[in-house]
Amino acid sequence: MVEKALGAGGMGSVYRCHNHDAPRIRAAVKVLETTARSARGARERFVREAELTFQIDHPNVVKVRNIRIEHDPPYLEMEFVEGRSLEDRLQTGAVPLDEALDLAHQLARAVAYLHSRGIRHRDIKPANILIDARGTLKLVDFGLALEAGTDRITAENSSFGTVSYAPPEWVDPDRLDPAAWDMYAVGVVFYEMLTGGVAFPISGTGSARQQAMQVIVGKQGHPPLDPGEPFSDELRGLVRALTNADPTRRLVDARHLVRILDGMRGITTPTMPPPEAPVAADPVVRAGILVGAFGTIATFSAAAGIAVGLGFLWANTAPPLRNVTVRVSGPVVAVAVAGRPALRGADGTWLAPDVPLGATAITWVAGEGCTDATCPGEVCPVWCRTGAVDVVVGTEALALDVPPAEPRRVDVMVGAPDARVTVDGKPLVADGRIHSGPVAPGEHGVRATLGDCPPEPCADACPDGCTEVMADLVVPASGDVALELPLVAPEVPEPAPVASTPAPAPTPVAREPKLVTQARFAKFLEANPDLAPEGPRAPQGAYLQGWSGTTPPSPTDPVRDVSVSIA
Image (cartoon, rainbow, N blue to C red; front, side, top):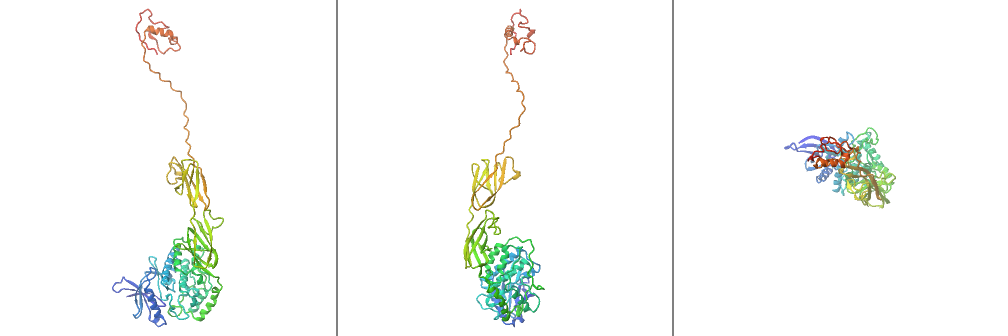
């Protein structure tokens, strides 16, 4: 059951339909309309589209489910894509860089798949690119597709397609390579996603054929498209390689484009606004004008002769140049061939566009944080490595083998014998006060600790008993490094002096008292007069019974056993 018309093109109309018994099953049905069937070659092209698309099975190409050639009218039943076209998306302006790279990558995968099966689309443009709600790209409309090795379906001295996305050589069918045509169209679509502008707008003045010829003649000798400075040199170089007016200098390998975009995905979106689109006569119209029967542009011999006459400017005077592929082994960050920066692919390949044939050199830069903007040169960091290899450009593939950087010996001297030294968290081997080990060229952090320190740097929050010193370490690409760190054991403070006090008198040793008679005590005092009463060493207190001198109190009394304690 037909729900609504989705659009019309050179080969017919497309409708959204659903199954009569299962309304939720939808399909896009392309019908060869009655008015189109009367045109020369229309049915043959429709049949050819059916034959080509039915064999295609790729997530980025719309899937054909059913074909009814014998039906009146003939139709193709395709999967229905719930979303919008890239043409509608571009009406709101440029596509964010990460999204544009993702869509370009999906488109390149679709084209690479088609080319691997010998199919050339020949009408890649935003209107033929659908994007579903999940961001999946679907390439549609194979009404102009061509299978490699077959004769052109178009009439003699004519070609087809939408002129804004057709390459400059479109005016000369004998020079027209459909694969190079597809890649040129991919480049124009990519440029328009990045800038939001129209690469080759039509003027809106004159007949459709006149407007078409204005565009295609204006492409002769036109410089490659360039999205501008807000984008990286690598990205700008890729767009230029895809849109070179000379097909011999154009990137035409879709598989290589997939690898290059693999390496570019995830780069940061520029903060500056992109430049405006190339200036063209007003008014600017995005949609390409389609002239002649079934929405195609027929380029007749006279018009082709005019354009080809202009085309000699690039065909005959251009120097012999090639897009050169370099297969690189090693940790390089930049490659150039004959001074032309190469574009990095995802599998170790680099593409250098527009390289002159003959003897030249491949230059390279390696090292963390190193770029060809500063290396080689006076401001090139000491850990960066550069080199050059002489080559002869004459084939499509060259090889470059860059060995990894050799670690350099690092000696760190500290003032404490029991210190621990690490570089980027990895310990060095201690030999007394010198700690040594191999370290890769580059910028590193070195840490020396003494005492009971935590495993991670503690800075101003180190616990008591921990001494820490941090420093930057720059290891060059050649030569060894010696570094001295002022790490010493902390000084132990002297104890505070204590005020002196007289030593306490020794405690007299208790003696067992001696029992004496008065007579013996009298004799003791005679022998020790200084202990006599009132003598210099006389003990405190009274003597027995008021003795004085050495005479007992009762000298006439008989001796009595009077016990006294003699100290």
